[in-house]
Amino acid sequence: MEDLKKENEYLRDKVIELEFELKDSKFRELSYLDILNNLDTSLSQLFKEEVENQRFGIGGVVDYRDCLVNLKNNLDEYKRIYRINF
Image 1 (cartoon, rainbow, N blue to C red):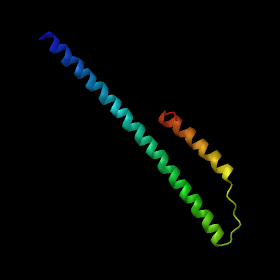
Image 2: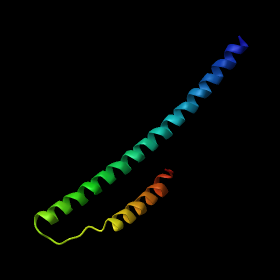
Image 3: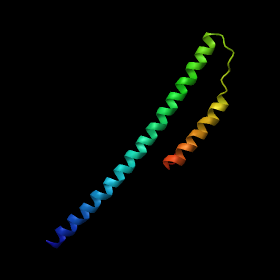
Image 4: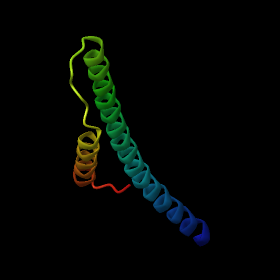
């Protein structure tokens, strides 16, 4: 009987531990999803502007190095805000 109580207590503790891990995993998943959505939106806008520049003969040149620097800065900011590493 005592063994069953110990096992029950252990399982309750394990459930609580897993619930916290699940919350943390969900937070990380939502953080990554937010990052990917923002990247997708930014890239779509960049490509749309490039197509419009070509369509209307505007001589705007896209500086892809500058875009990558900004991307790196944004990712660093996400890491800082959400306290995640990737």
